[in-house]
Image (cartoon, rainbow, N blue to C red; front, side, top):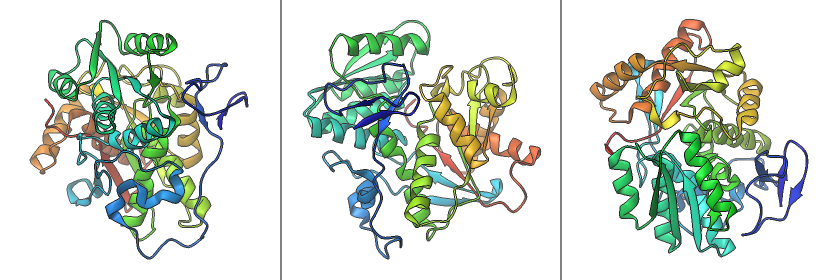
Length: 361
């Protein structure tokens, strides 16, 4: 069953279910699966990847490429630890959501999926669809990075280039979905994607002997990782496996920082568009109200990072051995500012997600 958290409407889940509520709000699964035991297990089968946490997922392990269990490494220069979400089959955390979303599509008997993306999510959905033998059509900005487009094309997916803004790309994809051309495997709208990204919190807690950090920092566009992490941490707390939820801290790009603006009043994002952080150029996040609620309920925050700080941090990360895409650098740049503002206190236990590889070009 799918439900709308805004108006309360319910819909039967299936291949013909709507991709959003009639009121325009995003849909979620009505149930929240939890394990039977209040005690975390002594052992998890990491060979099952994300499905080591099967009691939290409620989705068949139909499509997998061995994703999950990304390393957590010390980063002394940042006084933090990094979770290397760039180390995935397609080079980004989006594989978490794609594995669950395409597995759900396979469960439903879907034969064609559609997605809109600036790169990483499109590649993840196309790759997992190829693995499942499901046709894929990916809508992308006409000026998306060539390396990412070539990678999507090599999966055999149909790539539709759309001129205009990132919002125009989404609109074109939605029009195709509403014409009945495929199932919307959206990283922003599909609830299965967030079941997948919630595993980042489950893994992180397991890797730290069921202790969660004081703060978790991540780039913030559509909020697929931040909101997924929030749901994962909340599920762990509800299961009794952990006893708190970290402060969630988002890093947006200047010129595309609606969550920052909402939290801090008006145009608080600090300047002209940060095009270096192309992965988070989202001006109207599909689940904006849910992101804001997650930040407020966790005691978190969001701020906007400019191009100069992004580029400087990108270089700094590379010199420290972290070869990631520029969008990742917004998170470490934001961490420095959060410390200056006192949002992160000296001695706080902080984990930063490095979300995508720098090898795609």
